[in-house]
Length: 124
Image (tube, rainbow, N blue to C red; front, side, top):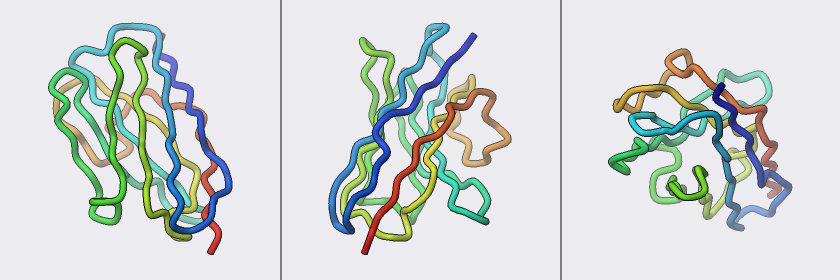
């Protein structure tokens, strides 16, 4: 059974960097897409970034392009989200998600497995 556990969320000042980690277990993740979503209070869950496990292909929402980087470490079965130049509007619960396949979908309903989420708060 696939398990995803996120780490790293905390309170930071605007402009500071933060790295989130998602440790995946329960199977090998060849031909899987791993993604980060976020959900602010009263808002729908939205796609942030995704990576195809085998090819390293990535995709980003326009709101984070140039500031966030998604990458993974095969040996540690871990996907990271490096967030730079954080803004107050980045405040949300960040979720790690996984799905089979090679296409990086941006709709949350396409993902089968989810972590519990980690809170990121950016103060101005």
